[in-house]
Length: 79
Image 1: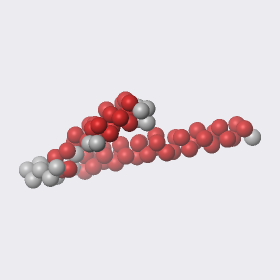
Image 2 (image 1 turned 120 degrees about the vertical axis):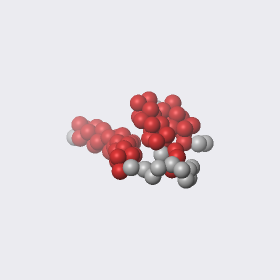
Image 3 (image 1 turned 45 degrees about the vertical axis):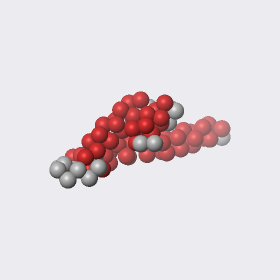
Image 4 (image 1 turned 180 degrees about the horizontal axis):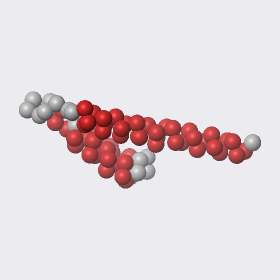
């Protein structure tokens, strides 16, 4: 499916929070002109690129780093 549908499904399936989905949609919409090769659209600014990077890092933290930390914490309490 398209990115909008995939973001909504990730939130509905509790893979990301509703607020993360809202943030993802904001990033998606900000990048829409460039993704669709709108030749009249301005190039992304450094600030827009930074927002995308900040979201990507937060998403990676939520999906990979935090669960690994929780798993380690559980394992440490078993010792």
